[in-house]
Length: 286
Length: 216
Length: 127
Image 1 (cartoon, each protein chain N blue to C red):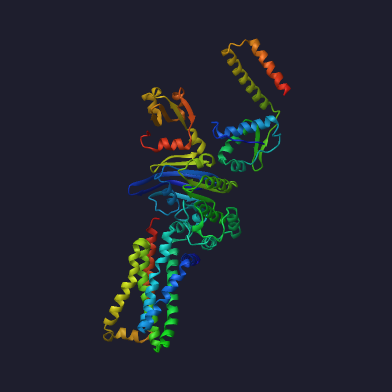
Image 2: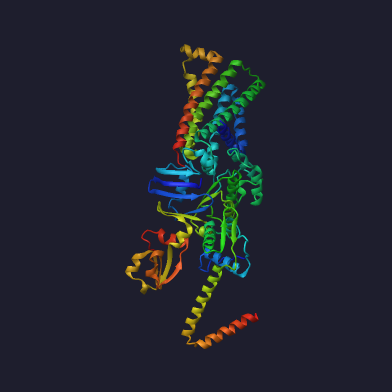
């Protein structure tokens, strides 16, 4: 099986919010970034994948297993990291292992203690004594100890210092190195994904904006800059998003339309640029 | 079945740091035994207090947002619920056995005599009371959580008071069926067990339904 | 082989990898038959996406610099290959045309340009 995660036409309606028709595929062996502004539906998507929320429509397959009909099989194969620990604060790390390991037949105690050592986590410490970064590593250590094939991370880097964020990226690239593991990584800190992600799924206001290769995503947009007098109404129509200030303007344009902007200063767009310029309705901000 | 036991063990590890508090609630009723000089009162209080601690698993889970852990573990929701009930029944039985062992000793020391009948009567009523409390509490906790569902913690208290009130008012002597049951220890025990089993079955089904519909 | 990636050069990362592998082949740092680092290992070490390295390696293969053998790695093809030479000549032509245009702007005569070239070549030999 080549796709570790398949999400098809996934929908969910809440009061005041609707996640609509989300479709994407994460192949085996790669990292996918799930991006979008806060409140765009990233966590909802993840909770739907985990069947923690009831979907209104669509289908989800984890390593080929239906996430509801074969829920247990799907969960045996996936590891999850949330933005904060989901273990009891009072548990010692050794107790965490005792409590959780029983649920996974292939739990490897030796591996768990090796990973703890590698992550510098003392088994005698209590969960509440760990820093945020350490708690994240503890959740990773658990997922690695039963060899989860698909790792799902929901905003793991929010509130982490740059060192921990860098460590996480390193851990993730090690994890997928053998080609047999995949990562779905939701974040609003797109810097994390700029280099390491292979695929990007961008959700905006509950709708799928893009899903595909990161290079393709970044390459399909450019940033153009110029003085206010260079901005015609015709050009403006072609722009995906624009920011005007007293001495000039900055705009996001589709690479396909680049010819018309050739006289302006053209730069490659970052993921952040794309999210910022497309994330606001109307595409303009001051 | 295997998964159910794993869930029971998980619950044990949840309350492990609070074992002292729970032990205290088992010992406290001894005071009432001394004051009241009645085994029935002691056991009733013991079961009532223990029932009040069943919210621990829920409040600890909530405090640590552990519904996310339950959400990712490869275990059916029904197994999780059954595990929780078994855990709570084990807690109740522990309290019952402890009280049935300790209270008569204290009463004997105080010079009271306890008949076999008193003993079995207290045991049956203890089981019945604990079941009566918990079958309401647990679905309440599942539905509303330990904070909003706190009102369910007082069900045991209310239930206890009502039971006390009713026990004296039931016209036992006028119903032949009741008389036969109460006067035969075997029948009394048997009917308590059957009644309790039926109550738990319904309660468990309700809780499973609540949890399955719950969004985390 | 040395690989250094810049985040601010504006050159896409796959392009940087390609260029540096090419110059390593030309300079002899990478010899015929040597293997490039494994795709996934390189991605891990450089903290870049696997697909970025895949793209660089695939394009290098398409351009005839390396040969990818399933399960065994990416092998460097001959340094003296016609293709490499052609590419080098092409590069020389481009750079010279640029020099000529610059010379025109600076109204440098053809003779002066030749002279400049010989001076530069002598300096290179001295090095």
